[in-house]
View 1: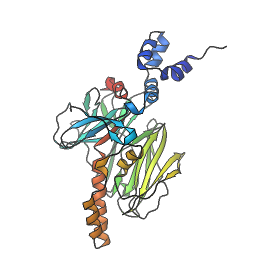
View 2: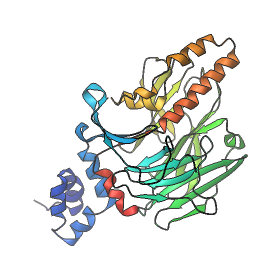
View 3: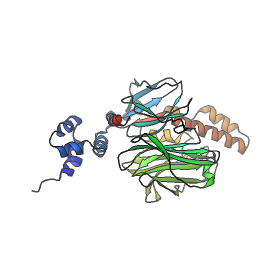
View 4: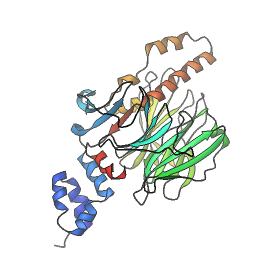
Length: 360
């Protein structure tokens, strides 16, 4: 019987062992030590270690930040563990903009500063500079975290300022910002378009760009993290009978989108990206309008009660006497839901965020 290749032993067998056994395996030889120390091994090992008992969710409210285990069988949280912010902040001041492998990109709302933060180790890095890089404006900017082919953690910052677009990349490896070119349609620079946070999947960052009007334009912007080239692909063909929302999800390195439409009743479909085209894989019954991001967590048995519709909002909507008033009220709920989404971030395995300590 032929010997198994080292790559097969490391990535197909050792990735399924407990962490203590993996640590002991590093002493076998220099080749094993090198392979077991790579980010690829760590990510595969963490993904195969993820079970319902070690899932965590990070919650930020007006006064505290806490981590709670997820109890999947009854859609609830376990007892919370308080997380101390290692940086100065004010109440209701920290917004989560993007996350990757347990590393968070957050904004301090009173100073507009961007930070990289590892809640597990409490290490953080301020990204702001004297020449105005690393400052984020809500509803105008978009942020995406990614890793390039050299395992360098980077931040893509898309700025919209008075109809002018600026795109900047922060490299953790060299600790600096630089500008990269990006030409897009002028209308996407308008504040009437909402840019989502970037979702990293298969070497590409994806952003939804949705117009905040009924029947408005909706597209997906793709950023290849290695060539640093942008392109535009179509949005899933959802009905335009209400304002459209889309939440992107990386599931086992395949991009999915929960796309919703509707005004007083939301229709939600699950789509998957194949090439540059969307394939519908699931349709859900209509529901009352809620935050789509929080609904998607609930769909996976992660109930977010602070994302449910407010009865007062329903009352004021039903009493609106004109289409303009109804549209204004709907947009008010839409932006309130977007603000709520910035308060929640889900972790995978409890060990995964520790991997990033060396990068902060």
